Image (tube, rainbow, N blue to C red):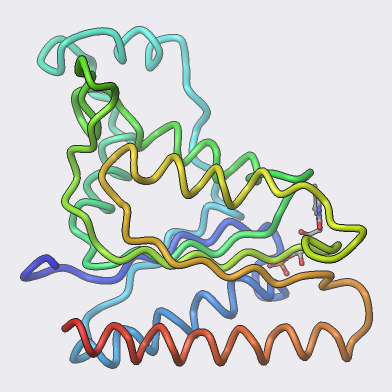
Length: 206
Ligand SMILES: Cc1cc2nc3c(=O)[nH]c(=O)nc-3n(C[C@H](O)[C@H](O)[C@H](O)COP(=O)(O)O)c2cc1C
């Protein structure tokens, strides 16, 4: 893990203070930060401040060597913010069985050839130092049981993050969050137990 840095929380819900995933992501980040001797926390709220989608210039730049690219300032800000983070927490709702558009925009800004991954004869190779990644997913409907929806979100994140070198990934999904208040409460309690487990496990490593 990096010698200096902070914890980065990328929050993808549009629901701001009403969001369950954002609230649980904050809880996890605060507890991890406390255990890591009060390291700082940076919250990147992409749910209410969306990253830009790739422009024509951005797409053209991806094909050029680094030194010939234009500034791509927003992409660089997001990449450097991630590079300096000791750990990454992503909190996100499921949107139409997959990642919310804002999270896809963030991914498009940070996955850049020759910058965060290298093209090689063995395929794409991650260029970032690995670090713990924690993902909290909230779903309105079921993702387990007989009426489960197909989940394109979790497998996608588990595939895309290792592409840039982030392979140490822990995920929890909160299921059927709009079913009943009792069910929602039980999912939140399960997530809080999972958070305690992640914090305890991190201490064993640190
Ligand atoms: C545009 C949109 C699409 C959604 N699509 C799905 C979906 O495909 N499956 C699902 O289970 N919930 C879906 N939901 C519901 C949210 O995932 C769910 O309400 C979640 O608990 C919200 O989390 P939050 O409180 O962190 O914002 C969708 C919500 C929105 C706004």
